[in-house]
Length: 109
Image 1 (spheres, one colour):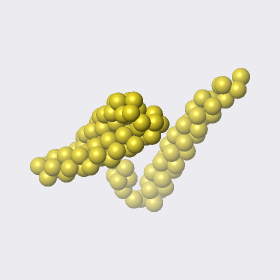
Image 2 (cartoon, rainbow, N blue to C red):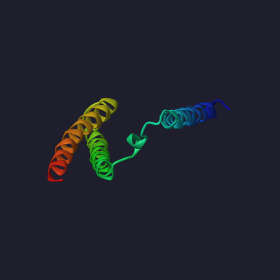
Image 3 (tube, rainbow, N blue to C red):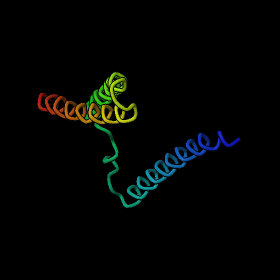
């Protein structure tokens, strides 16, 4: 019975966060409409969405490289230290690479 408390709490917390996010967003949009303001600020630019996907893709590839290199490094040093350091290092490097790639793609457009 105690083993089920953590997963249920996790999913309840995720549900609560999403519920508050969407209800707040709806209230903000309704308030803008009531005041006569333009609600076009909530529209997502397709080009920005595409660049966001590129960023996330490069970041997740970097994390997977960090996990693989952490596994390889764990045979030489402590397992926990190897995994955390290589995941954080590869994630940071992948974010720098993603910034450069997205910046270059943005300059082309």
